[in-house]
Length: 371
Image (cartoon, one colour):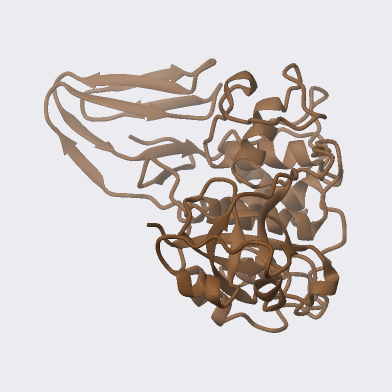
């Protein structure tokens, strides 16, 4: 099969970056990924991880500028670079096909293509679905794989000499972006949380469950079923990509900083490995002395935690997302019951991550052992 400027991806499904052992990642943390994101700064772990995996590079002066608002072009570039499959588009081998082979192909919608094989030469226009199935009645030879047709973006405000042109071209060719009804892309417009999350899910070919069918027990108060982003925001909360405030709000219209986007991408990649994220605070060491059936030594050392669902005796690794410090604790209590919080730690456990006077930290939760 040939098509002008057609590229091929060898596999049909989105494949994440190779999962890294979280404890190993943190053990190798660079104390200064960028001059303006030192140890202890917000989103430190996320930014360091993305830098190590070549998802972000920073500016020419060596800074990352985590507090700057992110625009549409920057967001698209970071999200596409976070998907390793989209970075490995290659022209793959041809395969000889037996008679009556059924071939299923997916293309961007409204794409004009032409298939040419030994026994098939048919112009085809895809109108709405981007899906096509053909049968090779006499066999033949065709290139196999997931296909996308590289197309020039049709945005009136995007020029070929701009730094983001190649990224927008790829996003447009893959059907990730469509632009506005007036034909513009508005690359320099800032992006809000709902838009960022929608772009992230589209790039990874995820269709969230409808809001009314989501598993949220306590939906955020500022998300309504008729919101265009309701299903996306519910997905984000369920998978800890976003954490509600104590008042149970997620502010879908809030603009996003570069540091926050790095955090969302990091959480998305690690949530595929079952990690959870949220706020963590502490309670007095003597408040909870319930002994689980296993790992009682953790209780004796006051290395305990409350979690809403994990069974008593589960050992968790808690990481401070601002400095990479970790502590291993055992679940022996229930909680927390404040929106946005993921674990409550004993004072001793919390002090291994941060000075207790700080009160609350951003934490990640990884399961090490389940009884």
